[in-house]
Image (cartoon, rainbow over all chains, first blue to last red; front, side):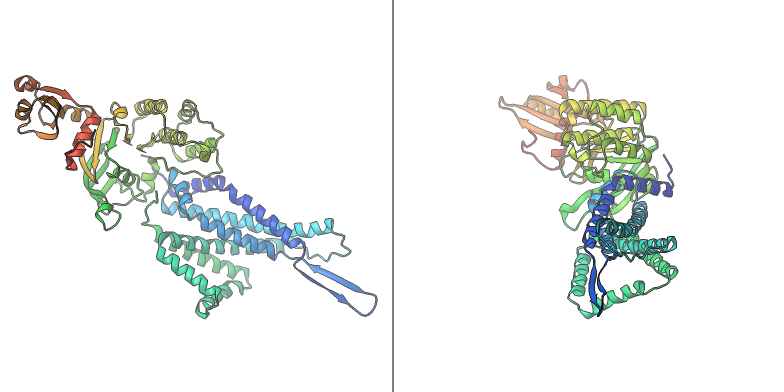
Length: 244
Length: 300
């Protein structure tokens, strides 16, 4: 009999996932390249004609496209790893529900960091590519200091992990019960059609996180929410049999 | 006897209907370091039994112990067991060699040399991906993982699905060899009973969720007999024995199969009947049709 310690197995599962889910990183790159391409034409702009010799045409470029694309990427990634095929991959080797979720949480956290770093770097690429490719008379850049870069990356990482956690929880709710599946779809439909209770609930969750200006407090909020959601997933699946 | 697996009144129901009853009040003990054949017809509960041992499924009632621990969702049991079937799943981005490398990181007893030898003998290309393999090659690859992991509890659920006969023989050869060099407790289910009967030590015979029989193979061969002769002689011989099967042959003679606790060598002469030992395959066929209350000729 081999006695096994839980953290060691979680680490092995994480390594296995990093090797096995390399497709997700490719998807991230494609998503971000597409977002760069979409943002290349500019995301806003206008022209000012002042009386006098100055004619100003300006185009604004920002990273919102890339960030939103990265949010979508992590949401979809977190959702699909709750499906049967990914569960089966885990249960080929040594695992329990606890180690499987812990390894998925670690994986999604690393993916969040990767998504945040690349999203921030991609913003630079947009600025650079315009300088090189376009005949720009005057580029008014807003270069980020290393400190700002770090804060930005940390902020996006937290957002990505929050989204991943929500999506993972929704994914498991989908997996464990047809009833919950209907409830979730009904809720999303209600939000979509602007039914006040549903959209109001979503809005208060949204503002709870988004209207937080302090990174530290925001981090605490995200971590608390994540702990609640991951615990919920664990208690939801603790007695769930392997679907094989 | 050191116990590896112990079932105590284990029932598993997947739903309220009678058809959802996968395991019906099963009790048995398996000694460490034995090769156990799990046999029975389709839907008899073989897979569920093995999945309960692996900790994939939770008993509805009763208790299961694997090395003294309840296996469901248990890390120690997961680390000491492997469940091999044709539905094993791997990330599509990994090559077979990379999968083996990963398996090696998980299983402490993993033998890389056995894995390599088996890959060669099954002619599996290490740079292929799992989804590119044929059904038989997939089964072969799963068998590589099952054998090379050298898990104390090794569960093979229909491991030879899709394999041609040569490959099946190769697999049995390796199974025997690996078992001899690193003894472990093996559960093996297969429809090719005649091919594995040499390999098996004990039989768990399932029918409609029940455990019909849990005996050493040699015992079964010893106790189940085929009898033939004229009708009156066979009738006389059958008196007081458990009749499993009877058939009237065109020439008026009778063929029967019986289960007897104490087979007597001199019976053949004293009853003037022919007595023959059965193969394991035949024993299983006779025993399961009796359990199901079938009397027609569907076993042929």
